[in-house]
Length: 250
Image (cartoon, rainbow, N blue to C red):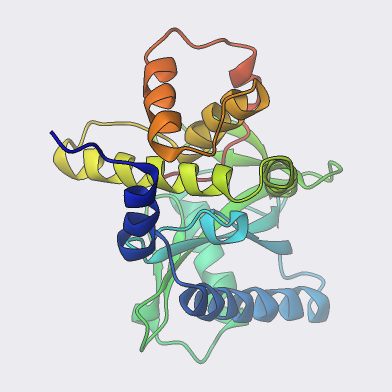
């Protein structure tokens, strides 16, 4: 039988998996316009309730997929001003986003169960505005609210980005591509089985662990085989020590 080889996967990535640079630039520009409006409102209105907005998720990390049309923007909110319950928090965040971006219509800024979704007309790009409760800790450390349990989960968008960018420098090109392949696979599994769970941040941690421990990333076929073989084994809890610092919910 014909074997899938590295060159086949390279071609497949370009055709099906990777977001084109022009699309990345367009999406990043739209997210940045929203972020800049929020930052301008923060600067102009001390009592606004937001502290800052940070571009988060796959576009910021460089692991975006062509098949995904929603992006993440973390808004750090003053914990003492934010409602205690999740529905109240999301509704409050929506009102703040409307203040910052009044030219958008009501149906373009929608409160969901755990975030506010802003939809841009024309491109259809959806930006999930995710509230992070901020209590003044350094390094952009704040707290997400679990949409099911209400538990506060410690996170830092800045540390997430610094972590993956540092590892991308240590393992250029191939690490990012292999993460995209695995995220693409996980997305297919979720479509087939609604109960399937595979966090994007967990995929990143597993690939970084393998790369840091000497896995050859130059042959995509062999590297993916090793990834799935290693991932089927019991997970080292030391590897997952930072997994609760998670923002990417897909």
